[in-house]
Length: 77
Image (tube, one colour):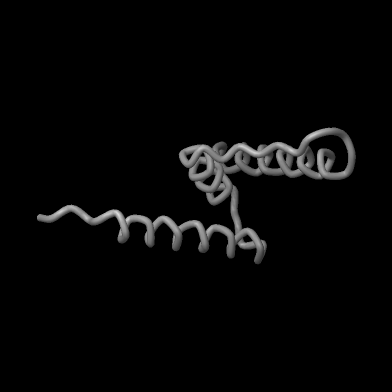
């Protein structure tokens, strides 16, 4: 069996990323989805943190807290 070429793998990667973004934007994510998205970002060396103080940092901290709580609820099931 032949291996997939780089172009095909890049297309699959892009489609996965687009689907994750769509789920996030539509509010369709469950705790398991959050975990998959975080892993996908880490695996692709994406780690952006808002710099400084202010609303962006506060919103990010609240988002992390909510995601952590959701993931914790999912893993307890």
